[in-house]
Length: 178
Image (cartoon, rainbow, N blue to C red; front, side, top):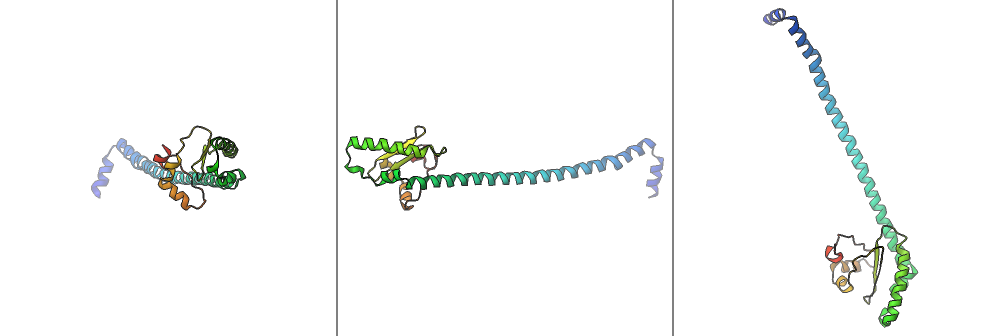
């Protein structure tokens, strides 16, 4: 202890000022900066995660809204008198000319339904005789009836007992061609 105080008295004023500057200013400033960095980093991470959570909830809600609207479209389309007439009509007894006129009238009626929902690009109906009614805003790949009935998704649709089954563009690539 005595040697330290003796040494301290023997040191130059310049060294004492320099060591005082480091001990009383630089070290506390460094510690304060480090603490401020970690506190601000923690707060930014917390706010960022909260923002991400809000964004994900918003995206989920938007997807739910679109899904609900699509289901409402299905329900409205199925109870629509035009669609009911299409589905209940026996096309097996029609001549080719009658069938062609029937398809044109049916597709016009389906277009009226389709254009009320801007996010649906195409609608395809199949009757039990293999007649395909297809309307859309752009050309879409039409799935042949024979290919559809032999695909596993067809049995899923049949098991739904009238509930809608929507196929996403990349959900069944062999079937949809995407």
